[in-house]
Image (cartoon, rainbow, N blue to C red; front, side, top):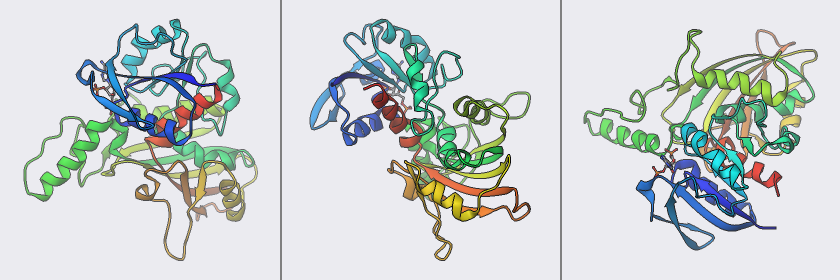
Length: 333
Ligand code: A2P
């Protein structure tokens, strides 16, 4: 049965990926409504060979809509999600607006699909770094429960939206041309640089992205005893986040071979772990891919009996956002 779909933020980096993922996964789309700011009203986007006009988002945009995919930032979700629900739609929200609300499921379909059943009109899509980390951790955790995760991210510009991706390109060009460049979207020059994730830092010294990785993981895995420490930074990569992950285990520790087997048999994960040719997960290869790539699978040299290291790369715009949200929408079919 086809569903009428609205995309809020259709002109954005994630919004455009919604269209291509719906198309690639053969999602049964009935009517399609593309919504963005008044700046984009009248702009045309193509879906399955047909042109659709973008409309300015209003509270009346959701008549006859079954599923509304939101990706226009938290404040838009907070302002408009209820209008979509009132019109009878289920909201799949890519923002952080509702993720930690008790009555809002936070879903990675390969991990906790059953949670989606208990929604009250909104299902939240987790933070991109959290999803990509869990795609690498959960296949092992299922059989060998982890008690400790230490993660460092290498996050692409795409996580800060299309304007940040353009800023990385323009900054790179300017620096190569020896011209001055002042960033407007990101807090620091992204080109040829690495800086702490551009979200607010609280009194603990952790930024919001780092805290999301902790609290969202606890909610998705329904286990707040796992000790998680994150360091989140931006690197000059256009799209696809990478993460170095250190795992400590509660009881038994898998062998490298077992870990590789658990990962390679998990849907949405590919093991890329070629030591001979030093070929491991790279954002450039993960870009545009639905699967997350996991490699550098090794026992921790300091604690080989208890701890393990991994490296993951996953497309932030796809598994970290649009793909995961469309997979959630598929659970509603
Ligand atoms: P627009 O392109 O008209 O500004 P990104 O994450 O790549 O920055 O994209 C953000 C998305 O959110 C875009 O589609 C953008 O539309 C949309 N957006 C931003 N502000 C509003 C708004 N006030 N109402 C509706 N959509 C908005």
